[in-house]
Image 1 (tube, rainbow, N blue to C red):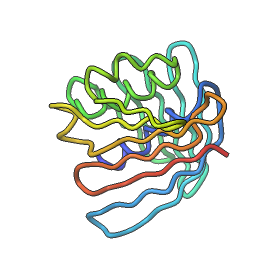
Image 2: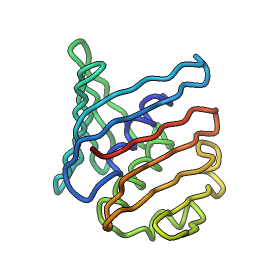
Image 3: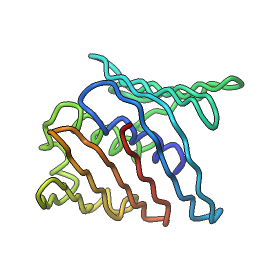
Image 4: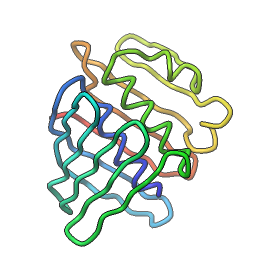
Length: 157
C-alpha cells in the first residue's frame, strides 16, 4: 500500500499535464526504484500513466482510485484507505493552488520557493514530511518522507 501512496503523489507536481521521473526508496526492501511517466489533470479526475519500469495507469477521483496494469485492475476506496485521502488532498491542493485543505492536516512552513508540510494528528501516522519546490508557480520537485521510512522524490521533466 505504501508503494501506491508514494506513486500517487506524482499528480501533485503541476497545475497541468506533465512528464515526470520518480525515484522511490522502499525501506522494508532496502531498495530504490526509478519510474517514468506522465500525468494529466481533468475536471473530475487525475490520470497517471507510467511508461517504465512497468506500464500501469492510475485514475483518481473524489471517492477513490483505480489502478490498471496489463494483468489486473484494483479499486481503492478512500473510506477504507484513509492514507489515500491525504494523498488525494495533496494532489488537489497543488492542482488548484488552494492549500487551505492541507492546512487542516499539516503545518505549513514556507521558505522562499519551498513549502514544507509537517503532519498533524492523523496524517502523522503516515507522513514524516512533505516538501514542494516551486519554479514559476509550478511544482518542480515533490519529496515525501513516510513514517515507515519510505521516501519518494518526483521531478517534472
